[in-house]
Image (tube, rainbow, N blue to C red; front, top):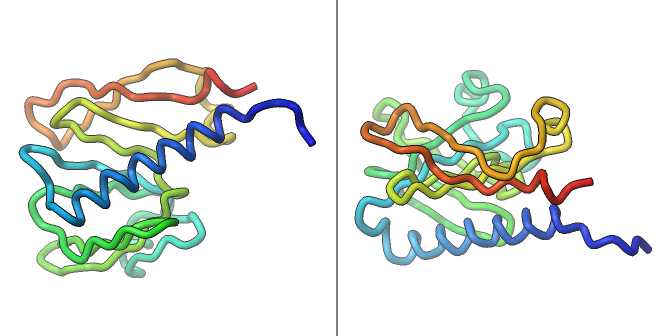
Length: 152
């Protein structure tokens, strides 16, 4: 048994729990005020369900926007299901929490980014970083919590 506390893994679990709590509230009450979400996820992750044409168009990762139109939001223990509009065609998706790479609410400049071991080879450890969301006019940088400083 290891005597080290895996703070990075514990933080990822807590951050995914936060996303689950937020989505549960949205499922029960709708999006309050100007809140909206940009969620980027790994389309290759086990459990991700999306139409074949979307998987072909986004073979590695995809960003969805939860704002004006979405329906059938069902929040579960391991992920959430949602139907979004793609070119006037509603498409159901299932996104496991483990597949989420970023979760951003630009209306309050809040964001989470999940690092993977592969990411560590590409970037140096950081404490904070900003995510710019190009689709959002008049958007300021979002504060992002990174777990790299907790990793060995």
